[in-house]
Length: 195
Image 1 (tube, rainbow, N blue to C red):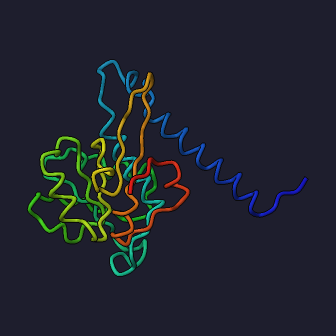
Image 2: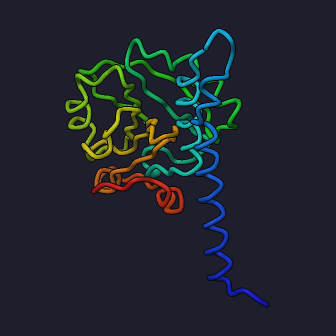
Image 3: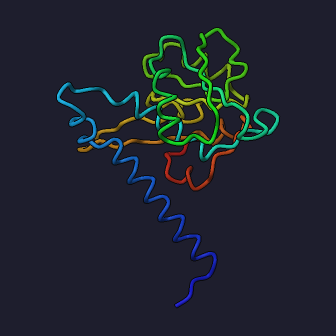
């Protein structure tokens, strides 16, 4: 029995999707959250940082913004976001393809120099303002706010409980296209898609 190249690719893509879904479910499983330690340490910030770094393997920015993976990539966080301490650890653990810098920003900033702008769940008040000011710019807006992509942000992820906990990835294709950023289509295929 022989496979055509097309059939081989289809099987390979299905295996990649299955592996990614399994990994995300493992990361967000209730055991991972409830059995971390007797002190009940919250691992969600570390998990968010790991997911941000994992995205880097599937994202390509326009060469006018990020000519190569040798250039430093800037992740912008709003002042007061505790992810700042988790990003370098996640980058080391996940073997980031980029050298990373973390920059603190405010809501009124231009976000110039940001390749990724992460909006944490605690920053809901200014979400519409952030989405409007980054629309059409080559900035990968990401958030753990439920419905972020549905409301115009590019990429979101959050925990959903349907009898069990699962990590949901979401993407807004219109916002992605207007940014000029490209995300691997196989990675997109495991996400909830909005337009």
